[in-house]
Length: 417
Image 1: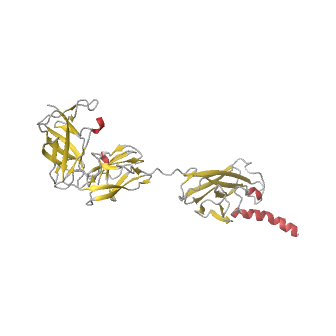
Image 2 (image 1 turned 135 degrees about the vertical axis):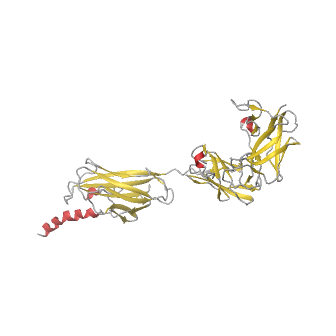
């Protein structure tokens, strides 16, 4: 009678595992499977057990993930599972945690196992795993699933197992500003920037794409401060962003009364760069340059809009030299305040003359400047209407000076009578 009572209790003891099995039956190295309690051969049925990893087979140190275990078997009526995560040494990897009442975490000798709390008809179980805070190399996930027939006996159930290897995700490619001349005047490419002046940032991983701002990104005259998640701060203030590419950004420095060293940072969807120091000046004048021939010639046009330069400077475009007595238009950045003042970061509604007088010389010959200031319907673009003085034919060096600061050397205008 006692024996009969004992044997009658065995199915009930086994069925008690419907509330979760004991530890170490997930199939990890040196450990068993649920076949220890549910008779049968593992992975011999028509189903399987799978872990769904929304982030793929990778992990980012310290970044929590949500996983789902799915047990599949068309003949089963009840389902359960156990899962563990291990380092290469077979020690515990990260932290498992339940996200609802369908799972629970049990522990044994420093190891964690997550499993069902009550086996039932749902065949999916969702929970979370938080990786170690640092890169620990590949980690291994071991899972065992039970597809049970629900007859409260340990026969006729099917046990499935699987394992996966998760590799640390590649480190994000953070933007990096070049250490030498990484932040320069956007016109001259020389060191020194000014509030409201165009500046250029050189480096690597500065943007995921190459483009300029679109018209619809200028809202009520306000310039965009980010394109495709790329932004720049100067002295912790946002700059207007005109052009982005992986190696170069063109931005307008924000308004700032600071003078001297300021920090410049670039932020992309991958993260934020280390700061690079630039020198903020009241004025940092520079002429924009045409790219051909090593940026030798200033970006200038005739009064009718024709490009100024030697013939054939641009393939397929007309360029012609200047002649003494003609009025030409030059363009630059960083020439400083205007009167009336125009805040950076917006389209200039109407032309605004410079607050200080600018001097422009062709070689050593002064030129008459009929207008100097911000161009209308542009942003941070200085325009100079200049009467070409009587200078010899050829490539003539040109320089502008304002507040004791000169534009770059080796900038030329082609003159021909």
